[in-house]
Image (cartoon, rainbow, N blue to C red; front, top):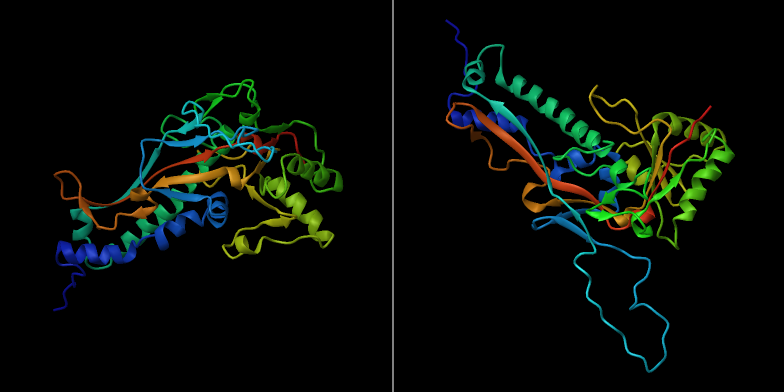
Length: 336
């Protein structure tokens, strides 16, 4: 008489089987980092930083002038001044976690057609969809919650002369005030729209130090892409294309998009008609080394005193900037 064959007769074998379907996301988090344009671009530009530890993430404010840098006489000496610890942009480290739980019932169903391997694969697919969506939603939150990381709208404000950033007041301090353009741009998919966009890029550029990543809504990007494609002026950022991102390389700027709906009904998204210009030299995504986008390398852990076992994922991180002045936002752009 035929009998069902148990694919995992013991906890150790079960965990080995499930772990086979729930691997680490490639090399130290690539599977998540490379699913988001902002993270992938910053990683490529070496602005994805892994830190050994610390109570908080802080950035010395880059003021408009350093008194040690100057034209001077041949007999003059250089001065050395300590950085004022109060002149630091301070960022709290935020925590993101996830878990995939396997319990005794799941193990019992690891016979016959209800194989746990298929169930585990479903959990993995769910995680690979949920985690990137949660990160993407966090990056576009208008006002991040207490436990959420900094977002692009919170770092690049539409009212940069009010409020604070990183614990410092923006009022009266130009280095803490990003650029804002509220002028009406009737069609980004036209020469006038292109000119207005690159005027903002150039106005924040010194030499090669300027906004190099432009993120706009999907509608605006489609209008711009169609216009440039018609004129045979469309070129992609090849490094981003290798990661399967739709981008336009125009001058030194890489132009990408964020949709306004998201893949979850509750997800945050970029505001309609907005364009953000980011300077990757002054923007970084920082995370602590011991929680860097990886499933628990030690495998399953027992959940409390129950028979449930869980595979955990965690990252301790935040999005930071040390010169808000180098970024800009356009708030009134449309396309025909």
